[in-house]
Image 1 (cartoon, rainbow, N blue to C red):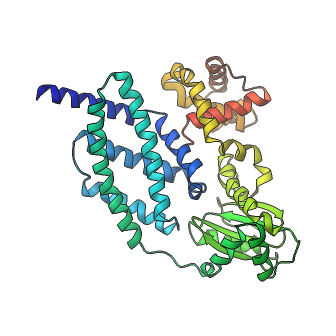
Image 2: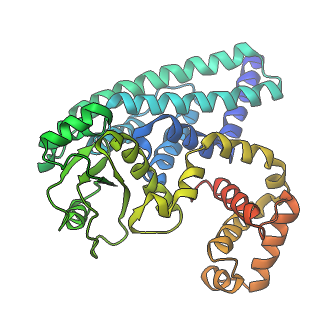
Image 3: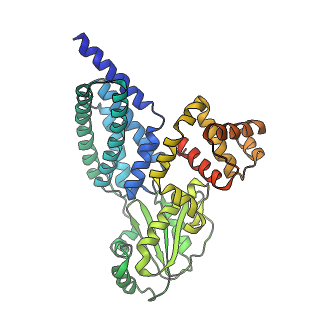
Length: 376
């Protein structure tokens, strides 16, 4: 009995180390973002917040060898309701959970192997986790099915929008049916339908653009317009991704680019309309979660060398690059001395071997610091 207790204490210690792994949440977030298209425009805080809560709850349940509590299941229900209101299907929600599980258990197996934990003990923990996850999935499905869904007046155009965004001949035929001029360039606008302000802002953007089409598609509000929108003020903090002009057959590609423009604009602190060409380099970087993971892995030892100062260094270097390498601007914004900013930049360069003053070194440094900071 004492041997079994000691073995389980080792498992509990392993779980606590997994929960404390600074690289785990960014890896889970990147995996979900790259494999689940519907999550592309969800706020980073939304995905990481729910992932952190579920991961912590699962760890506590396994450590305590128990089923989920009612309080934990209430949090699960709220996640399901939020996703239903965002128009995200339950299969997409469950798919995101499965991707998160794979990333978590891959890291757990790594640490277990390094610690010499027997495979049968790890299997015991996995079976407990599976029991916990089954209860969570059941509650997710039920809460998602029963969640109230807002009715948007544009939803009647959802089928036409779906056909337009297929691209190819289907889109060309649909464009003709909707009265778009054959051969004319079309524009795609994408934003998050978080509240009435988003709908109002997109409608304002479409003023003067001629007859268009708009509908809720998954977790985004999408508009297809026959001419360049007239941009007006309003919707403070709202980002509208834009791509075009393209032919009807290319609307599928334009939609993907407009979606990519939203998180790219947010990453660079922009708000309002953002054409994909304005944020193309950032969109290209953010779309390659595999390369970001490789970059983080390559410089893991550098982050370890920085220790407790890693977050402060990453935030400072990123802010310095985004301020066009002006230490005084960063110093005022972060309430530190200019020399502190310069010292952190120098420290980053020393431990990583990256020269943030050079063109490509600056790009690499920004990307790495963003990944280190967990996209915060």
